[in-house]
Image (cartoon, one colour):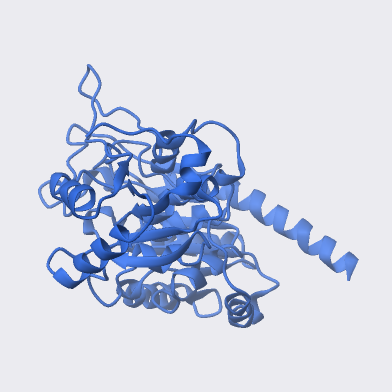
Length: 374
């Protein structure tokens, strides 16, 4: 099961490419730069996505994201408990010309061997990048966690030099349709003359959530120091209640709660209108980075540093390492989220204020230029 390096371009053109990618929003966004490389190498043959079905109503699948990139023309859902999905995949791949599967799971798969047997033996596909599963937690000689490449860099490294400048690593990664742009224009019609600050206060994983009261204090400092700015709470439906509480705490005239109100591409377009994102290590953070928005990102130390930092440049990552770093806990009860507790309101504000000041100055300059042209 060694990695098979992509071969020459003629073989790419002849092959029918399939991509296996599952996971949450951040997993999918991190794969897009590498998928752009694959799409270009296989052009004009479009990619076909193989992914998992929604796990619950608000679950964002890889297809929910990737259908907005123009890289794929079809999706096949891979569910081992639903034989009909396996039959469809096997039938299609068997009838394809030289099917090749790019096996790109975001985490180490317990079922890698099962997957390999299905795709290689039953579907007749050649398999590329088979060893591409995300690395296990790595430690140095001193047992401290080592810094890893960001996930999108790791994936680019499978298919070439991740440090080579190219259009595949330039945001935005999603391309909202005109009707989506129009919808966000209307939604923000009363805020066009205001710099917008996105707040990502939630997470599906309790161990990743910085404390609500501290977000309220950050919001109050933004409102006090920059009264012409407006705060927008972003996130999923599970964040709607806390978003409403935060808006109530700072005032309806200063903040807007859009958590749970937008789909993924609408949220992407909204984030592209903001001047900065402040929030947890979540899919929304990755969405902000993918659209070129600078992030003040609050990280736990549950995983290696670097690995899940957002796409793009200019971000500020706040993280505190402890003896228990690398725990991979989804809930931290025993130590009461100590690594997050050590990140104070002042820490976030000192990181945010200069970035916010620069962003607002840039926004004011652009607004002035637009008024002159009009």
